[in-house]
Structures are given as C-alpha cells and as structure tokens.
Amino acid sequence: MGGLARKQGIGTVYVTNGYITEEALRELSPMLNAYRVDIKAFRDEFYRKVCGAKLQPVLDSAVLARELGMHVEVVNLVIPGENDGPEETKGLISWIIEHLGPETPVHFTRFHPDYHMQDRGATPVATLERIYRQARDLGLRFPYLGNVFSHPFESTYCPVCGEILIERRGFSSTFRNLTAHKCGKCGETIEYVDAVG
Image (tube, rainbow, N blue to C red; front, side, top):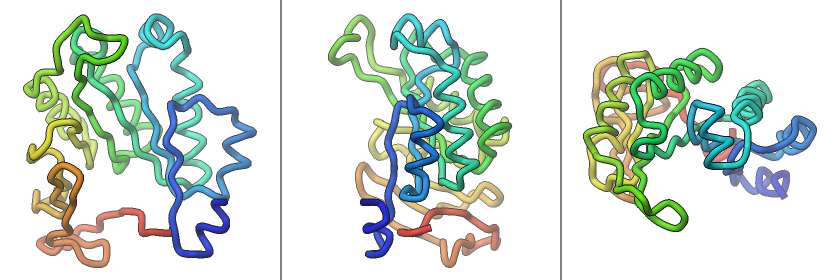
C-alpha cells in the first residue's frame, strides 16, 4: 500500500507506541516516510507499572526508524505525578538529542483525566511550558506543546532567530516566513518532510 501511495505522491506515516520487531520495521521501512512514536515516559518502572511493557524496545525502534531514513517525531504525554519531573524530562530530552538528533520534533502533550486514569487532574499548562523551555535550553530545536489549543508553543519557530515559521491553531496550520526550507528572516535551513520524501 505504501508503494502505491508513493507513486501517487502521497506520504505515509506510521503512528505507533514503538512496539515493533526489528524485522517488521525493516520490512515496512521502504513504504514509510515518517515514524511518529509515543515515548510514554523515560523510566522502565513506569512502562512496567502503567503499560505492562518495557521502555528499551520503544527506544530501539525509534533509533532504527531514523537509521532506516524515516522522519521521526516523538510524542510524550505528560501525566502529573507520573512522568513530569524535571530530571525525567531532562533525561528524555537528552536521550532524544543524542540518539535521534536535536532537529527531532517532540510534542509534549497535555494529559486529561479520561478512560482508565481519572485519579488526577489535567496537566498544568505551567508544567508543559517548563518542559518546553527545558527542551529549548538543552538544545532541542523543535519542541511543541499539544492539547493546549491556541497556545503559542504549538507553532514552529526558527531555532536561530525565533521568527514564527508555521503557525498552528488547533488543527489548522499556516506557513509564515518559510520558503524552500529556509527561514525568511535569517536564512536558517529548516528541515521538514514534503509529501513524499
């Protein structure tokens, strides 16, 4: 199916929790443009307790996807009292920078009490803003906040001059000051995936 999509100029993305065997990912990779993975926490204890799983296979699959040439994006659902501590978020951000690259888009998403986890409130926006600033300070070029509609940190900014490049409001986005993968203000190269990479 991915091969047919590419022939039609349609990109493909694999949205995953990261649990896939190396063999399966290698087999799928020629059909995929992007790999969007949830890294739910940066502690194996969290994975065992909350997910009934292990962290390392998720990290390994993200690294392999990058090695196979896919555009990799990470989503981290920030849950109050579970995975929102400064040391844990620093560990996750540092690992992403070292193993996936500082240009990796990372979405720190607001938790809302639904389904099986209703024993705590929504993630405070101030916590998300702290993580966003921590990510920028550590050298992550494209951090984002998710599930906080119309927040300025939903948008893409030039990591060099701070110019807004892609403005996001909820589910809509508009290119601003971005032409041919260059910031319109300072000329910094901004990598992003076209429809077919």
